[in-house]
Image 1 (cartoon, helix red, strand yellow):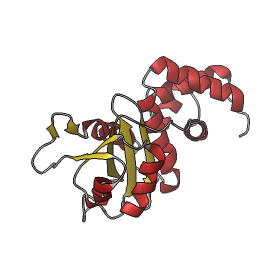
Image 2 (cartoon, one colour):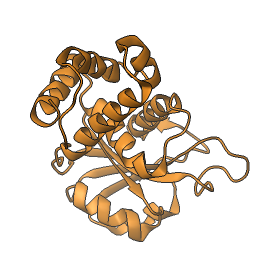
Image 3 (tube, helix red, strand yellow):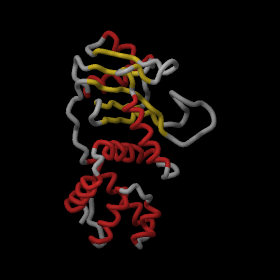
Image 4 (cartoon, one colour):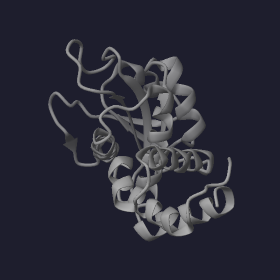
Length: 216
């Protein structure tokens, strides 16, 4: 990754605006740079986040599992398998971190290897009643389901945490008015990183250190 020609002052301002969730177009106006320059700098920040995201330790204890679909509002099929949308699979350790991955589909053969790679055996896993999770009933996990047609939560039996992450991620991405599919995973890992590192001061210092190492 090449050096940046922007001054340290402008780079720091762009980092602060990126962390604040400002779009590149608005950031360009505030910092006084070309909008393409700001957009490319933001792209490189997302790439650095993607390349430096630590591999999370395997989750244990109570883990929420769910899948969601990302993409613009389109007429036609909605919900699971919505045409033209990107499937994303997510796991969240209760009161802990989230792990996400873009998936080609949401079939058991696709999701189960991710679960086994990311969740320790004998953990308690919570899902909804989607058929792809049936295999967990006879697997190495304690499996609880929440029937969303009847309840959103039954005491400890819920997936509110991972659904909260989906809502946060979609709200953040909606402001960009469409994301190129080839860059979607960069935006996804950005959302994961923001959720897992919610302290704003940490986000700024982390990015400034990455930029010092790679871009300055």
